[in-house]
Amino acid sequence: MTEAKKSILVVEDEEDILALLHFNLIKAQYAVICATCGEEALNMIREQQPDLVLLDLMLPGMDGLEICHRMRNEPSTQELPIIMLTARGEEEDVVRGLELGADDYVTKPFSVKVLLARIQTVLRRRQEAAEIDHSSEINCGDLVIHPERNQVQVCGRAVELTFTEFRVLIALAGRPGWVFTRYQIVNAVRGEDYAVTDRAVDVQIAGLRKKLGPCGYYIETVRGVGYRFREQS
Image (cartoon, rainbow, N blue to C red):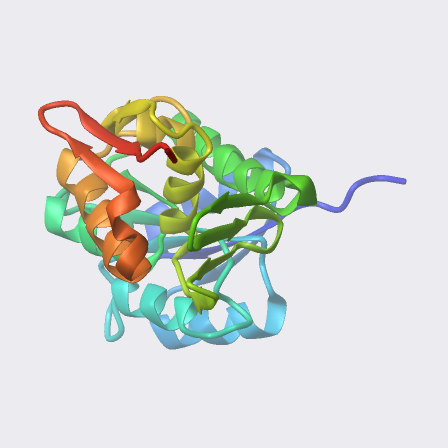
């Protein structure tokens, strides 16, 4: 039986870029649907349930960051992969998008080859996350991590993390005592050669520590290097 094509929703209001993306995604054997504004995109996401959303940040009316925010606050779209497209190239946009739960970003003008590689990486990572074995549960005192369910408990209370925060926690907690540079954390979570700023990693760590509350101290800062997960004595 032939495997069903993965479907991608492209949200882009510039006709030439939309046509370029549509052509190359079809050529790469993806099923493609398109939207040119935020409301149309949200309706298509709910009705057609694509496997990934390629989301331009600069849109008329509702911008890409607002779309991302709404997706991450709806149970039916919380786990749907999002790759942001931005022409601004501003660090603040990237950091904000990652804070909201986007999986990756590509800055215009972009290489189609690089974009396709990013799409494959994000789809593969989500599939791998869904297939983590139950036996990989991690217990660290009052902190319990359930990789197979994407769940975290602190002192017996469930804690809601974004997909990226959860993957950062898994990467660190999986090797307690190991020092990770910021780029090693990025590589562990998103794959190699992912362009990201130091600040974006620090934002994820700060948010993660805050949500972990009394267990936030497990994530230690190694000055001038990066972070590590505290070893249990």
